[in-house]
Length: 140
Image (tube, rainbow, N blue to C red; front, side, top):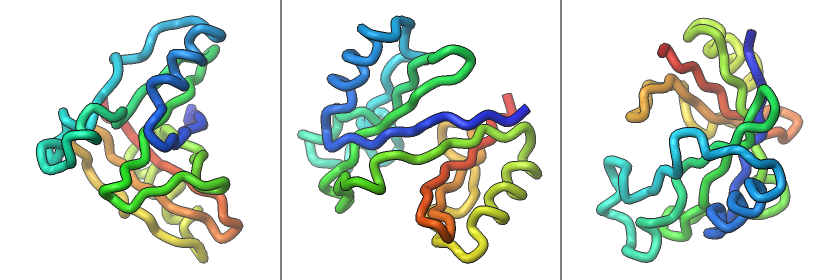
C-alpha cells in the first residue's frame, strides 16, 4: 500500500531541527544523516555546503518525517509554500509513473521521474493547485 510522508526543506538548519524533533518524538534516524559531500556532485559544492544535510528521515508511527537543507549555491531559498513536500512512496514503478503523470497534469514539473544514485526511482512536481509532491519507488 502506498504511503504519504511530509518532506521538509530548511535553510541550512535541518540537523538542528531534526535533533530537536528526535528529542520530542524519540527514535533514531533511518540510515543516519546523508550529507551533500557524499553525493556524486558533492565535491563541486562550496566547502560551507558540503556538510549540509542531503537527506534525513525520522520514524513517526508507521510513517516518517524527512528533510533536506536548501543550498544557496543552487539558488534554493526556503519560503512559505516550498518548505513542505508530500512524498508518496509507491508500490511499483508503474504506480509511481501513474501518480506522477496524474498529479503533474496541468501543473509544473520540477524533476522528471528517473533512477537516482541512491537507488530509488524518483521525481518532483507542483500540481495545478500549488501543492508540491515527491514521488518515489524503491525496488528493494
